[in-house]
Length: 281
Ligand code: AG3
Image (cartoon, rainbow, N blue to C red; front, side, top):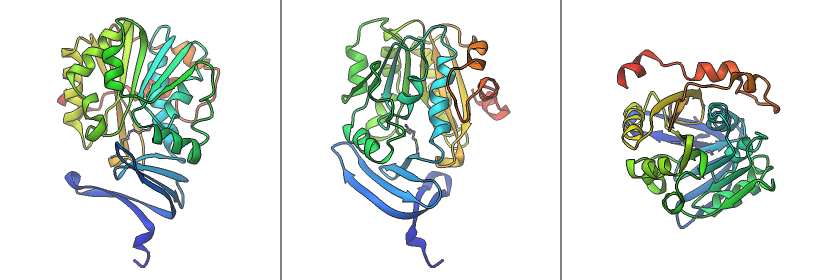
């Protein structure tokens, strides 16, 4: 093909495959103290943020990920008042969390301030709730934040990180889960992006195992599509201090805000366990 240089490609060497998006222009590139960030304008997916060569956010499909990282956990917890978002520097998860009127405080703890500054510039819709008086944006190491926090002080922890390599590696181990468990109040829930069920099955099953070792009483994975991520099929894994099977379906049906993917039926369907996954657990 004539125009191969007009495509952004993320290759998955372990999985013999790749994703390409046709681009109109590269808008920005910088090396921060933590990682390399690139911003593209694509032909059909709108703006695209890439970190260390990995797709993070596109205008067209980020609603799937951000809605599923937030609304299922917030409609599972009986009364989510305080929420931490570890990572999530593009502010898309924060925006969804703040749609819940019962949330009184949402703190985003992002290690790399440049992710948020570039999101403000190139993805202003994701940052539209940053001025909400309930929102607090911190630019510090989430692992240290959780270590320093007091016992039983938060209802929901959302880990919206990059892949488990580089700065995010320490967010996928027992020591981190143990600290999160300690910081959560009774009924507290941790939810963490957990990669592709098709490509990273052993990562997800080990997350279940180590969340339980860290003290979580129940663990569950939910599934959703995300075209720009490896395999196009993604997951988030929850650890509950208590019961995770208590979906507040009436509240979700009567949700006081619009969504584009999430609703009460999607919530229930997202937790259905595929055969191969159940066998691997
Ligand atoms: N966090 C999950 C990104 C993982 C993508 N992996 C990849 N492309 N290899 C996204 C942050 C959105 N707030």
